[in-house]
Length: 158
Image (cartoon, rainbow, N blue to C red):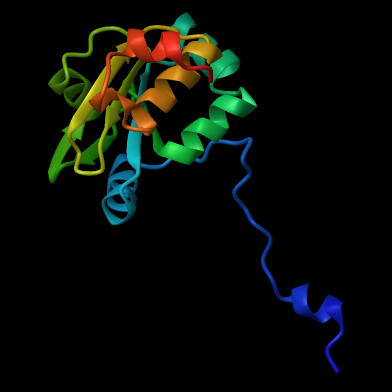
């Protein structure tokens, strides 16, 4: 006879918390997105930047914002001051070359890509959690294909 406790003894608990972001490498996120159609959200950040610190501390630590990111995106964080190589769309870039390839000159900047690695949107600067949640839903739900963000923002509560 199997007792109820024995049914779960060997089970692994879910390691993904809905209130914590799991950051992926750009290559890993792109591979995952290609297999299931989820989008990519790439945060380009420069750690000494005060707006970067504020975005991470105030906005990206918000539970509802994290839930939206986890629902629609694979999040990637790239520190542009690191000498790392990033791989994207079959190419290798330094972190700075990657940022330059999208014309990024200020930080923080969020880049949003579809599962095929095509850019959907780019947003620079600090965003509060309410604005970022709307933007995440706008892009994540594909509303950007049907209307401008201003129209979406007026007609939607997120």
